[in-house]
Image (cartoon, rainbow, N blue to C red):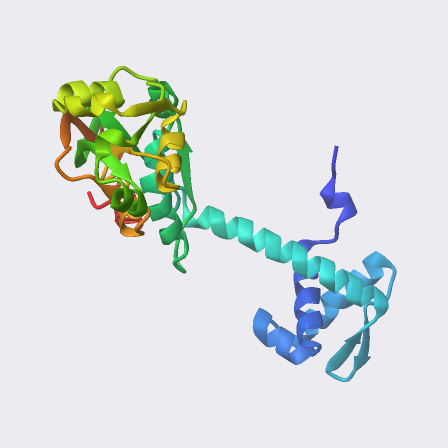
Length: 291
């Protein structure tokens, strides 16, 4: 069991010493600490006596550090800085952080790019993003806000609409220029992990574009893999242009107009009823989610 009281001197003595070591001057140290020069000198002498080593060589009001003084100054400065950082984080309060959650595709292609842009700002607070395709993983944990995909807001939650889901084919611009006949292209498909997901067979049936049935279809397993292959020009994937806005703006994907399907589902920003504070609302606005 640790007993810091018996192994450490009083912490204010270390604080006084660190200030003197930094200024190498008793007067300036006393001014920073808002005490008398005699009070500073008294504590330094006590610290030297407690340690049994000389820390400073005195030349009037100016001082030089001994070898032991240099070592203690470095350690004391690092320890006090670490302690100040921890206390500062506590004083900021629990609201000066943001916890978000979404499914993996929304996290990868829409939410994380916005969070990363926000974190580059000078006054950003810590943001965590939990990504899972299992609704229980994101709804049964404590998050400030969840980006939820579905037909309606779950019971016990409040929320706002971010955007309606308009499902459409997307491909790399170069592929579209090379192969205007989409029925002759490779359709990049994925495994459905939930009934409400829309893959190529669902899209072809619900959109009425039966001509796409003749196209070669490749199952890449995950939805993210289908989008990655599309970005690399390997075929045509499905997706929501709103979710993929950053890939579209960057010129990595282009939606195929004329093939849109309104799935009847929506992307919501939701939070447990009665839990959204004004501070959280302000942080969300800074991240790019304006409620």
